[in-house]
Length: 98
Image (cartoon, rainbow, N blue to C red; front, side, top):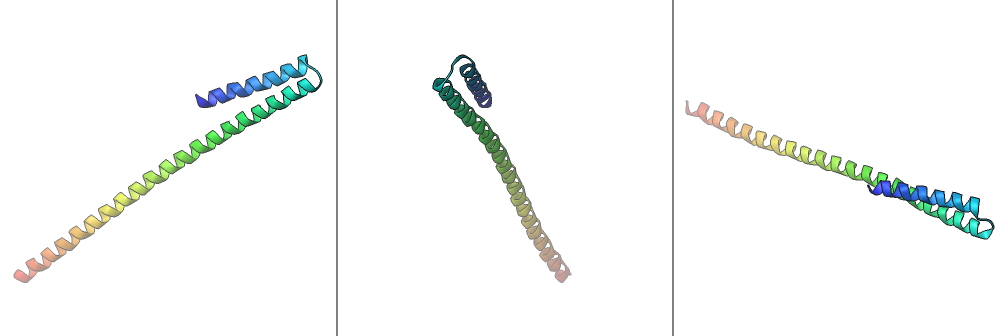
């Protein structure tokens, strides 16, 4: 929705520049074209920055998910190692008692 607003504003600024160039003359038209072009550039760069920020945020979420998954796997390995140690000690004790 936010991107759509910036696209509409950019189109309106270009339309204003075109109308100024056609219907006005001299320094007034030049000033209007300059400001419309400036605002078009601002809106365009804002769109680009928003797209980049969205990509960066999605990449951060992906890295967080991978980090959580790796820490869960590490915890599972530790639990299994401790269970193996307990079973080995129980087996040794069972063999000694026979």
